[in-house]
Image (cartoon, rainbow, N blue to C red; front, side, top):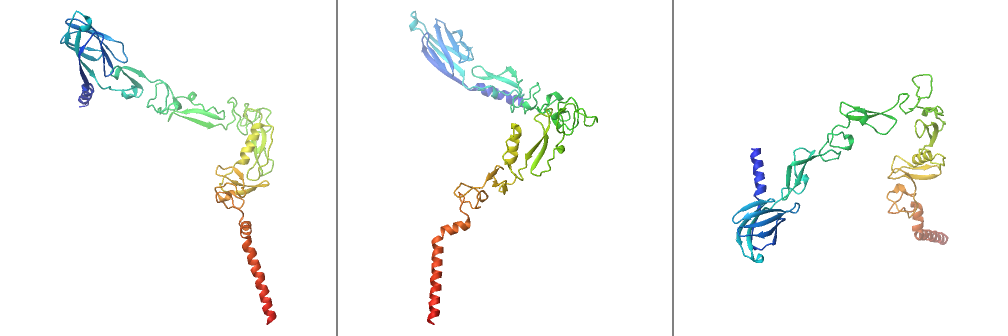
Length: 369
């Protein structure tokens, strides 16, 4: 049944044809039909010399006798009549030209080979899928439905296997062990915690030249000032105490970063990278809307989770916690008590005057009694 349907589809594609009759064409006359160019190159008593050219191919020619038809370049040309004369300019021929009017495809993507890794060429005129001319995908491309025979790993999300061996896993991080888990063919990156010489990494607590094998790691720098975070303790809750180096095999030293939960001092450090870390720790917060005094300044935790100074009257705001007065109406408003005093000053004065007058009249009344 499937074979019969396939044949029916192919027949349908090729039944869609276009036939035109051209009467009294002279030598060197040219007609165009569905993209083909048909040219009368010469006319003789019993036959005509016809040329056919498609938009993508060179011209092909054929001698065709009266009442005969030939397929030239995919175009069927029938010579129905010839009017012959000694004068070339008076010679004429009538043609019936039949072409396939519809293309089977526009580009390679419309030709299905049944294999996502095999590209079938859409070629010829009319354009059709040429299953005898194919090309195999060998490059790693996301979302093309093909996983090439060559290893692609994470470079092609169409491949279900990320790795086949350890060397195909690399996160460019010296602090991890990179291995391929052959159970699911996925890469695993495990943080190194053991003291092992020769892996170009010095984990926390490991020491160069230490007598105990448990802590011996000759990847550590012999001049380290510290070997673990616990050895860096300035006994202050206002700092984050770290034993660190830009590269773990460089000299480790104690670094005391300001703890943003307590204060955010201005820090100028000769080590640019440490200064950057200090600034980052000092500016971040965790609870949006929280207000607290940091150092000598009162700040609020903004939407991007960074500390910002409280805003004064007239400054743009979105939430009340951004304002000193905690009142936001597009801009920060005055503090409530101050606002009442300023905006209702005349009313307050009037009330005071009325009160004074009232007391005066009461006093007069008592005197008269």
